[in-house]
Image (tube, rainbow, N blue to C red; front, side, top):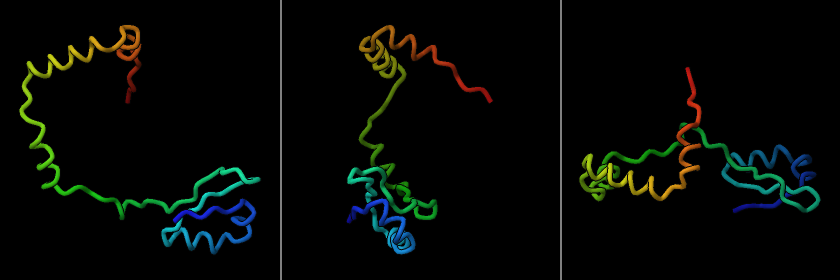
Length: 98
């Protein structure tokens, strides 16, 4: 559940609000009645969810077989659908160097 609080409430009840955020509650902080920020629990790496390998494998079964010729045909169709100026500026984008 999301609770709306004013900037003043956040300042005055900081400890209580932060404790509630730690417990999973979310807040919309307002200034003069206008929403300016969302206060949400931090997603730590410890709580990160991973997709089991079995689920990934099951999803990949529906893709079907890909061959080089099919990939090239798909790429040509996509290239034909993209505006030339857009494609040229995209392909000419600088790459990062390490």
